[in-house]
Length: 416
Image 1: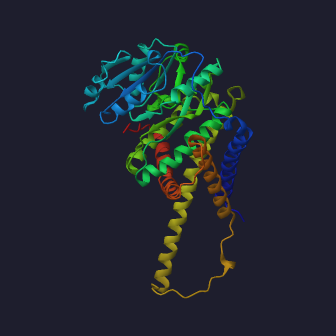
Image 2: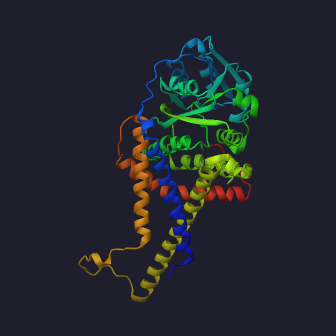
Image 3: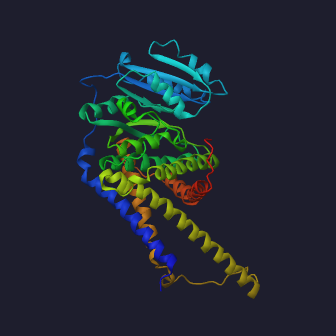
C-alpha cells in the first residue's frame, strides 16, 4: 500500500516530467526556426544603443568587460557606454577612469546603494532608443549585440531581447557543474520560454531593452536584490514581449566555491519566491499567458519538489543509520560479510528508481540541446555532468530550503 509520502513523490514526479516533456515538445515544434542560423552581418538601420556597466569592487574584471563592449561589431558612433562605480572600496574607480578619455564613454561615481540604483543613474543619462546592461564580470561576444538588435529589426513590437549566457572559464568542479547548468537553463530552457512568451528573467549580462520600457513602466526597483527578475515580471504583467537570441553569446564569471555558489543561489531563489509573492495576482490567470500558467508555477513546483525529495532522502538516511545501530547492538559488528553470489532477482524494481533514471535522461537531453544551440554542435560533458549532478543534487535543496526559511522569517540574504 502506498504511503502519503510516496503519493506526494509521484505527484511531484508527474508534474516535473510533464514540464520537461512540454519544453522538449516546444523544441520539436520550433526546430525549423532553430535550424536557421542567425548569421546576420549587417542591419538595415543601426539604432543608437547605450550599455550601462554597474560596478562594485570589480577592478580585476572591469577592463575585460569594457573592452569586450568596445570591440563589438557595431558602429562605434552608434554605441554609448556608461560606467558607474557604486561605492567600490577597491581600485574600481581608477580602472574606470582609464576609459574616461573615450568620446562615447561616460563615467560616474556614487555612494553604494545597490545595483538597481546604479542602473537607474545610468537610465537618467541615457538618451538612446535602446539600452542594456553588462555586468562587470561578463564579456560580450563581438557579434552578440548585432544579433540581439536584429530581433528588434524583425519585430517592432518586441520590447526586450536576452542573450545566451554561458560560463567563461570553467576550471574547477564547481565551475564545471555550473557550465552544464547554464547550457540547460540559460540557453535551452530560456529559448523555450521565449517561444512560449514566458521569460521571467531579463539577466544583467547584455539584455537589450527599448527605452520606452522604463519610460512607461518606471525604473528598476530593489526587488529583493533581483531587479533583473522583477522588471521581467513587470513587463509580463503589462504584456510586453520578451525574446531570447540563443546565438548571441555572453560569457560570465561564476562562483569558484560551494560557499559562494550557495550565497548567490540563495539570493536568486529568495528573489524568485518574493517577486512571485509580490506578483501573486497574475498567477494562473489566462490573460497573462504561459508566464502565469507555466513558467512561474513550474518554478514553484521545482522548489517544493526539490525540498520534499531532499527531506525524504534525509529521512531515509536517518532510518538506515538507526537500523544499522540497532543491528550492531543486537548482533555486534560484522567485519567480514558473507559471500553472496549476485542474483538479478534482488535488483530493485521500485518505480522511484525508473522515475529517477527517466528524469536524468531528460536532463541530459536538455543539456545536449542547450550546448548545441549555443555552440552549434552537440556534446556531453562526461565529468562536467557528473559534477553537476553531485553538486546540485546535494547542495541545491539546502539553499532552496534556506530561501523558504529566510522568506518565512523575513531575513534578507546578503548580496555576496
